[in-house]
Image 1 (cartoon, helix red, strand yellow):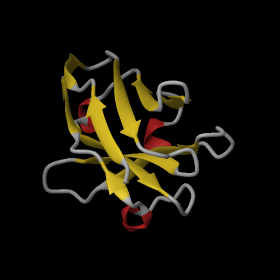
Image 2 (cartoon, helix red, strand yellow):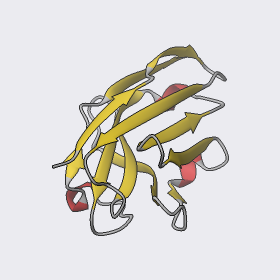
Image 3 (cartoon, helix red, strand yellow):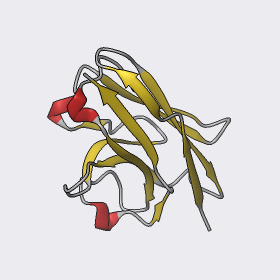
Image 4 (cartoon, helix red, strand yellow):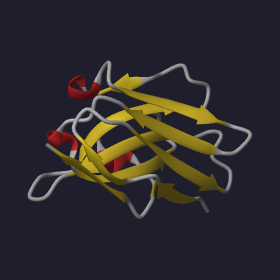
Length: 122
């Protein structure tokens, strides 16, 4: 069983930065890790993903050059560094783990965290 706990969300002004953390418990080294977000009234969308090896990093175009996914295998934690935040980044951010590799489809992930709210004020 895998459990994921996100932290690091909050309120930030446009142009600011936040770092989200996803602490995983259980055996996750064979899992791909993904970050998704869901804004009010919108569907959950893929933001970034990678494997623990760091060899399959993917980003949605809207965050390329601003967000960075990274991992610390010693802490079993995945991070999402978010810079140059925009109001359209406002959403609940979720961490997910899946055994079928990095995917943009939320249905292909097996475990989810509870989410952390990010609000970017303009």
